[in-house]
Length: 234
Image (cartoon, helix red, strand yellow):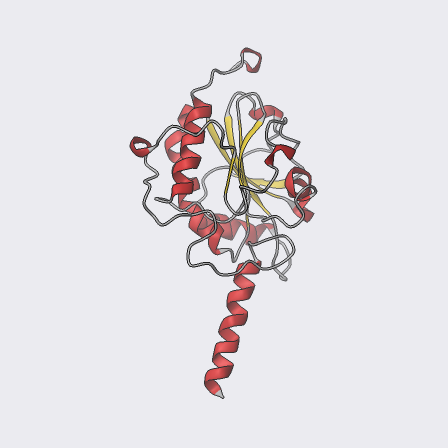
């Protein structure tokens, strides 16, 4: 009986952790490998990056069946966020001229924790060339949302780039969930220098060394190589 009780508690704890970063409506099952992430074979280092497939605009869970054109190819909608950390308040318009990687994350999310080192590496290695990494926190815990608790997650993940709180998921809903209500919430979008959304990672992890991390870097390199629009003044 003690063994059964222990296993029940373990299963409940695992389900709660996955609910923190899976789909918008239901906990994600625990995969042997995070969805959208192949076994760690492709290096994320620049020297190992292969050219991006020009026909590929989405990777991650159900990327082959999701209609990413609901946002890909469109101007990025405004941010409806607050409590910026490590930066003054930013707008999509103010970021034009840079390549922007926007990633939603939350506490208790194993996929977010696995992806955090990739985000830090992208920021550290590519910021000087024009990449802006933006983290948007979306709250899923039953505990009250506080700026201090979000800052603790940011510190634990080692984020040194701008982070804001997406209260009530307003931006997440407008960008993606209004059109994909069953989609994952741990999403990433890549925006080009003109402010147009070009690529999407549909959720889950892109840990260092994974195929998804390599593809994200290839996309970033592709966008960084594009000319800076003259009207941005950068």
